[in-house]
Image (cartoon, rainbow, N blue to C red; front, side, top):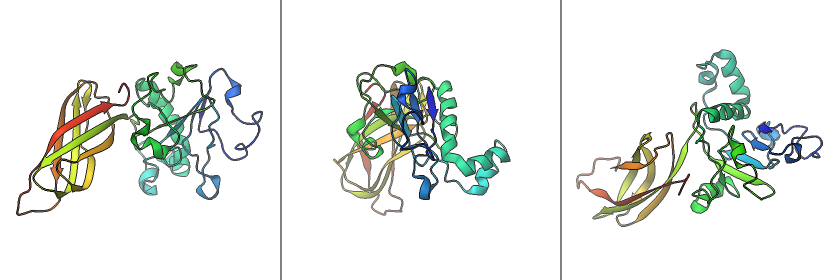
Length: 257
C-alpha cells in the first residue's frame, strides 16, 4: 500500500483500526507532503510515521513551487482547473505528482534515513547507508524487508516543478588565493549521465586555504564525474583585481558514496 499524503483531519491520533497503518499490508510506504498542523497552517496530511517507510520530501510540510504567486499558479500550463486546485491544496497534491514522476525515474527520489529534516541538511545523513537508500514512490517496495526498524523516516529534496526528481551530491572545495574577499562561488558538475546548471555553494567571506562543504540537489543524475566548473564572483568592481581559485574540489555521490 502506498499512502499519498494520508489525511490528518479526523485521522491523526486515532487508533490503527481507523487510519492507514503499517499493519494494513505486508508493506506500507507513505509520502508526507502537507503535514503542518491543520490549525493554523491548513495542513491536510498526517505527520507521524505510520508505515514501514515514511518519506518526508522537503521536510514534509511546505513543498517548493507551492508558494508561487496565486495568479501565476491558477493560470497554469495544465489549465485553470488544475491551477485552481493546486492553489487550494498544492502541498497535499504534490504527493501524487511525485509518485507519478517516480515511475519515470526509477533511480530518482532517494530517501535518506535521518532523524529529522534539519539533520538531513547536515553531513550526518549522507551518503546512503551500505544497504542503499529507498526510492520514494513506485519503486519503494524494492526495499521491503531491508530495514528492521519499527519506523523509518526518510528525507529528500525535490524540484519546484515537473520533473521533480533531484540527485544529491556533496561538494567539498578548498580555496586558493592570496587574501580573503567577499563574494560567492558557483559549481557546475559534468558527468557521463549529463551536466548540471550552476549551483551556488558558498556566499560571504571567501578565505583562501579554507575548506567549504555544501550539498547540491542536482536536476540530473550525472553518473561518473568527468569535469567540475568552478566560478567565483565578488559582486562588485574591485580595483585590486583579487584572484581566487580552487586548490581541490571533491564530489561525492549520495547514492553510492
